[in-house]
Every structure is written in structure tokens, then in C-alpha cells.
Image 1: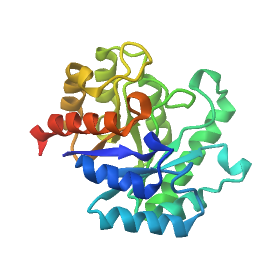
Image 2: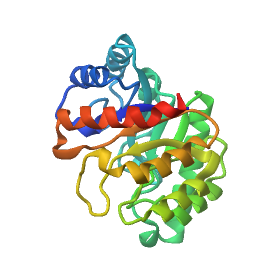
Image 3: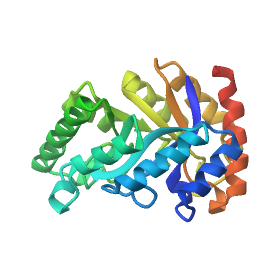
Length: 255
């Protein structure tokens, strides 16, 4: 099943309470709470507060959107254990991480090896706590293309390591569909937005044709996951509410 949600960094300017109220008003079901502003790593009191207000509103914590960069963050003072403890206080079943500090083309073999080793380590630590690890599918990381996603999953080779997915701005529909198929059962959550064919935030409804393809492909993958709105036109709550209505209508066929 694919459930509708929101990535909290869409509204960095809002408080967690305001985001919860907005998501409830929109009729979505879950929130990926970001670690940069809304639930900073190590602030366990805030994490418990946000968990409480999320659950009290009848919503789920879909994930903890950390900015832990494998092979890098430990060296600059952010310990993964701190991230994991925060995720547990938040009640997050998934921790989103970044596969290194640079893109695949800019990463040498030694650095790549250190990133892979760290992903294996954090996947193991999280598994012991009953939490999944999933790498953001994003430029500037080792998970920055279809082929690199497959390679990274194979190199890490851990049962508790997964990949997020979103349509890369430079990819056409066929490439996006191919990438979804290549990730297969390792697919975690989806980040949903419409910036095609140029890098400009547009109403989600304008992407109906391509997102029907993507969601059909994702729905064929066993298991439950969230399709979470990330960034909306003009960063406005009104645009979000419109996009939320669009997303819910699309997902209704799989409920």
C-alpha cells in the first residue's frame, strides 16, 4: 500500500505544531520529520514532543529525515548513535541518510569504500534497534543515478539497507521508470513533487501523466511505503493543500 504524507522540510518556516495541523487538515497520514530544524539530532526532548503531537493528531511518524552523511558525519562531530537515539525517541521506523558527501563522479575509490563501510555499520546498528536505513536518491551522493543506486545497494549488501526514490530532474519518464524497477524490493519511501521538464516548482496536478506511471510501478513492489510531498509551488500552504488533494486522489485506487 502507498500512503500519503509530507516531508517536513517542505515548510522549514513552520513549527512542528503548525505542520501537524496542516497535515491533518490536508487529510494525509504521515510525516517525515527533518533533522535540520524540526527535530535536531540529540534533542530527545524535542523528538518525544514531536512524536506525541504527531500521534495525538492521528498521524504516523513515517521517517526521520536525517542529514547524516555516511563516511563523513562522524568525522565532523555528528555520531550516528545520536541520530539513532533521536529516531527512536521520535518513533521513526526509517532513518533517511545521505550516501556520502559527494557525487559518484567526484568520489575516489578510498572514499567510496569508507562510505560503503559506514553504511554497512549504521544499517547494522539500526537493525539491532528495529529501524531501517534508507539512502536519499539525490545528486551530490553515491546514490545519484539509476546505475549508482544498484551498485550502492549491491556494495553495501545489507538486509537493512534501502533506497528512497524521487524523479531526478534531468531524467525522462523512461529513465525514471527504469530506476524504480532496478531498485525493486529495496524501495523505501517516495518523495513527490513536480518540477518537470525544468527545475521549477509546479502544481502536482500538472504531473498526473508521469506520476501515474511512477506510482503504478511503485505499487507493484511488495510492502507498504509513503509517497510524501516535498516542496510545493511558492512554498505556500495553499499549494500544499491542493497538491495533497491531488496525491490522495491518485492513491485512492490502491487503498
